[in-house]
Image 1: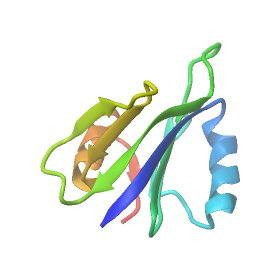
Image 2: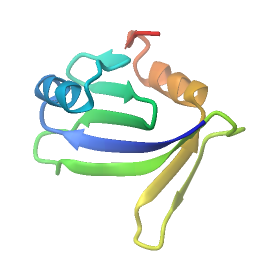
Image 3: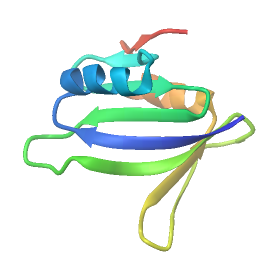
Image 4: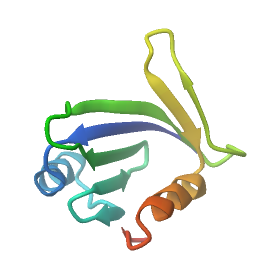
Length: 106
């Protein structure tokens, strides 16, 4: 299955988890306190990441979670927006590479 991926930079992961959990009507599947959270719904892969003080919040990148993807790939569209394509396993390995102690709900 192919799902749209949306990645945002946020000021507060804690506040954003509360907000987006309500908006998505789902709990995040992956959390890293004060750093990162990831939700997977039937149609969407949605992640948030804490931005350093003084850095802008908002869209980080877009992409596709596609379990048929044989490797992680990225490209920029005609507007300069970064698009990634990956399988759920690729994404999990990237998360664990950055945060080995990530809390994962399966």
